[in-house]
Structures are given as structure tokens and as C-alpha cells.
Image (cartoon, rainbow, N blue to C red; front, side):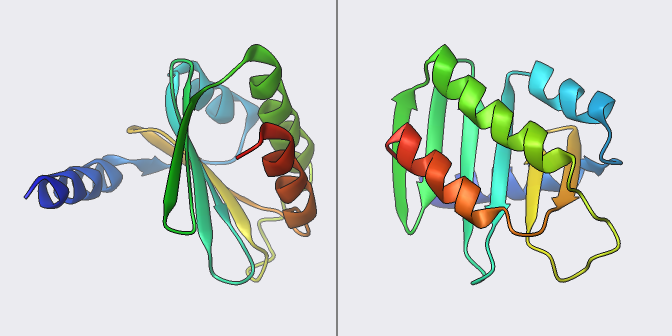
Length: 128
């Protein structure tokens, strides 16, 4: 029953999220909320995510969940990956895997070619 309520809550929250243009202002407004998620859509149709609530990171991948307190240096590594890949966004490419940054109000989808190697390196550095 708890899972059903959680699932319905997530669906309700997702339906309230507005898709916005991938601009620096929109990205920063999501990050400023300090309660957001970054979804990594990989080429093999897997979706992995990092959710942030204050200084807690919840990483979901391959039917497992890792919760840990995130350090400032780790947050900088994640931020660096997003900043580097933001510059490579190509909205015209429909086949490219995407990174989605969202909170309850806004959602930004970035179409980024060839980001998976850098993402996997980040996961290793973060020990997730």
C-alpha cells in the first residue's frame, strides 16, 4: 500500500512539472531548489538517477538504491559533468541519449551525444 501511495505521488508530481527550455537560468533555478533529480537516460534504455535533498544523495540504478551524504567536492564533480555536457546539448538530435534535470515545478531535457563514458567515470569517482 505504501508503494502504491508513493507511486501515485510521483505520478502526480511529474504531471505538474513544466518542460522548460534548456537555458542556464532554468537549470540554475532547478538547482537552487535544493530538492531535484538528475535522470541519465542511457543508450541501452536504462535510466539511472541521482536525487538530491539538501546534502543527501539518493542514487537509483539497476534495481538498487544508494543513500549517502554528499560532500561539497562530490557535488562539484556532478556539477562539473552537467556544466560540460550542457554545452554539447543538441535539440535537433532525436536519437541522442538525454540527461533530464527536474524538480516538482520544472523539467529541462538535454540531448547530449556520447556522455555515458564521462557519466560512468563520475559514478566510479563517487563510489556509487
